[in-house]
Length: 305
Ligand SMILES: [Zn+2]
Image (cartoon, rainbow, N blue to C red; front, side):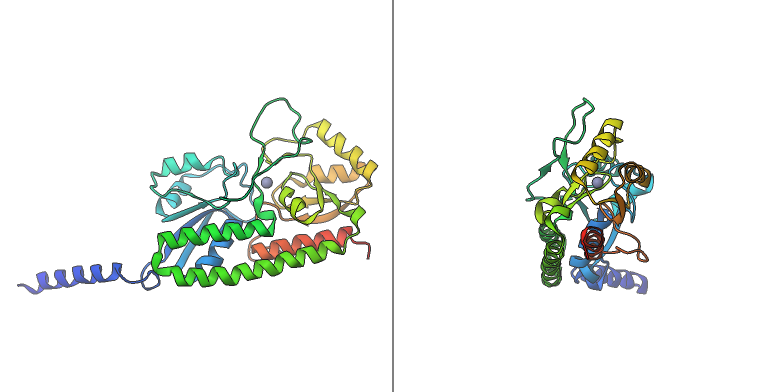
């Protein structure tokens, strides 16, 4: 046997060996999440064993996202693809087809009871699905996301089970503490002041879980603009119900809310993070930071002290 042949056999043996090593010893599990909030959940469960990328980045609006050719490559390269579902990523099915990926996207909201948009929303005659995709705005739902992501990572990388389970357990405990924090903060706001305006209807699950009422001129998607009638109705409602504050969102055009504030006399209470995290330098680089930021904005605008 020549030396060259011998070394080939040796390399082949090494290759066989390396595939049986745990993921941490070789390549990380490549996970693609459709948007920043999901990406953060995956990081918390996957830890060092996963390499997470996202399609819709910080401060960007996933409702109206249009995928670039590079995104098809990202999908094709991922072993696990995590989506929100509930109609949030209307562009995703086509992107997966275009990528040629065999990965079956995981729906992180599986098991969550979908909320339908309240009847006061769209009034412009055409019919469309009014399922509210923003399930992550309730921390109890975030725990369902985490549990679904845990199952998906274990299925793709069974050798990592113990790590993923330990990471998920630690993160779920943090989410329990966060949920309690939100409830305690809302309890400090007088009942009659628990009502605000945002630009799009992204806080329905938050409202159902924590009892602050959100009213929005735009529906559950940012795709369609608010009509003049919707805006007029909101201004009347602010005046009639003495709604204390209107809020900007990081993914929507601020002009609509600024106009409503000017015409109604309500104050702009600050900016809420609805559908996207901020980058590392911003106020909400993680899901937990996002919820804390939002609740701080709400209590300072609605609280009386
Ligand atoms: Zn939204």
